[in-house]
Image (cartoon, rainbow, N blue to C red):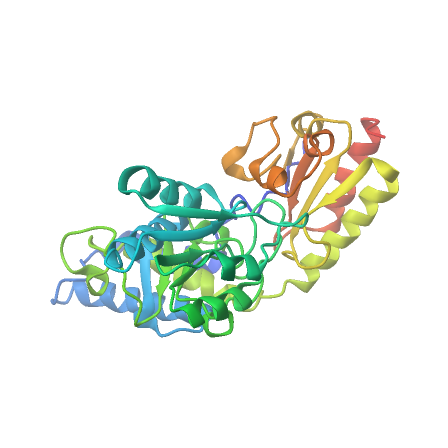
Amino acid sequence: MDRKIYLDFNASTPIAPEALEAMRPFLTDHYGNPSSLHWAGAPAKEAVERARSQVAGILGCDPTEVVFTSGGSEANNHAILGVFFANRDRGDHIITTEVEHPATIEPCRFLERSLGAKVTVLPVDRYGVVDPDDVRKAITHRTVLITVMHANNEVGTIEPIPEIAAIAREAGVPFHTDAAQTVGKIPTDVEELGVDLLSVAGHKVYAPKGIGALYIREETKVEPFVHGAGHEAGRRAGTENVLLAVALGAACAVARGWVGMPQVERLRNRFWEGLREILRGRVTLNGHPSGRLPNTLNVNFVGRVGAEILAALPGVAASTGSACHAGSVTLSPVLSAMGVPPEEGMGAVRFSLGRNTIWEELEEVLHMLKEIRIV
């Protein structure tokens, strides 16, 4: 097949035209350092602050609560390590879940190995949902952070963040959520969610790779992740990446009009019905049937290996799990935590749709599956 079909938007998105246009002047004319007080630095400073306001707009927070980072992984590391170091006098206990992205799990494990942190990893149900009551029971007088992702990158399941936030607030424990997969897809207003920290990944929201943001509620104690001069109000040293900050700002401004993604959800549901029709009982769904991201469809081709399915679909870009686990033929940790039977989970394929996905592309995939006699 000569045609290329992209169905891996949870791994990365194309750059929005508006983000590309926002970057152009900073590739040629506006080269000043945003920390410089002269005529060359002023446009750069103004652009960074405008971008900060645009990111704050989709999060419903004050611009002063937004810190630019190099991406979602840095934002997660900054939140987890920053809160831990800032609260060592209070305790050393962190609560998280079995289905977190490695950018959350690994910083927790680092603190556990290197500094003796106590990490409680909570289980999830068969849909990938953590029980808020389990969070409540896990809190001790030594707990300094709770971190639970907003929605899972592999199966799309949305976690009960407001309920967990209420528990955390009652206990006086800072609460962080990794919203890399949710910004621009579902509402991410920090007041409605009730979180103290929230991570944004640029390349999941139609901005370039290498840029992200961390929301830090004003009163939350967090140590700087990068030490040096007092950039980002002393929270992250290093001259701001003006080029990528303006791109993220523009992408977030556009994304506000896409929240909910009803048209994408309709395509996703139609595609799922098509799969069920041609595969009968040989395909099963991973993740919550309704409480999941509107663009995400993770299915098991029962009795087959997901990587083999994709190999038989030349030109189709999809994933056998999260992008970070691509190429693996073992059951992903997320599916394992959900209790998916290995004979089903080995056939897992994630199709994640985007703004420019059209039905003709999905129809072509269904046709190809018929042709390779998957049934």
